[in-house]
Length: 236
Image 1 (cartoon, rainbow, N blue to C red):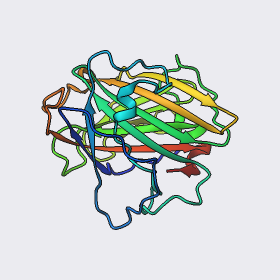
Image 2 (cartoon, rainbow, N blue to C red):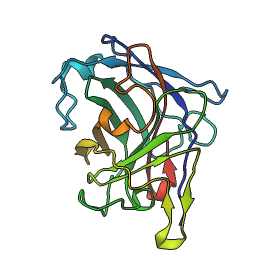
Image 3 (cartoon, rainbow, N blue to C red):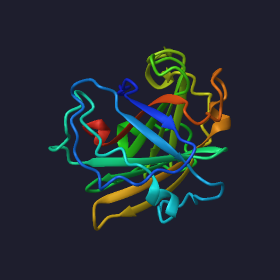
Image 4 (tube, rainbow, N blue to C red):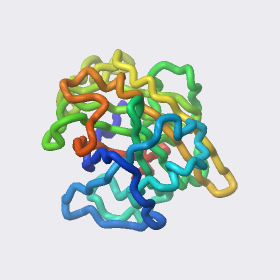
């Protein structure tokens, strides 16, 4: 059994106010190793309903990441059968993400109540890695995967890809006893071959680090977003 763990690959800045929405996501080249920066707008309390619809005015004003790139080298993922982009925001209780994925046939064998299923092996899903605090290292970070059925796999790592213990079905990645308590809303459009996952991660779930939670305007965290299917044979 194997899985991919990526270096945390973007810088997330927290703003005190909303930002104007970018134009529609465009392909970008990140192969020069430069870490891009995205500002997460401050949302008014109660501005977001976690239903996957993204109809709120707050989402329309949120800045887009642009198109996700190839995981291995950061080049545009023009040949990938899937593509994705995301928007982010926050309020005093949650970090919010809206991830839109073009996937020709999104599917999952799991159920929302399944405990830490191996989503990366069998489902169409997205992954969030988030490192509160110092963006200059890959330590003390969280990983959350959510699939199109609403199943969740989540864990916390002390250092990059550490600890990992056990073998076979007993193998554990990080501290899987940690729970993100992520809320998710999903909208799947099979006619378009696309889906939306809307996520809300409570700040209270990220309080095991020494970093201020929730963050203050101007704070910078490191983050990685990832979308995949077919055992990660297709990913961005």
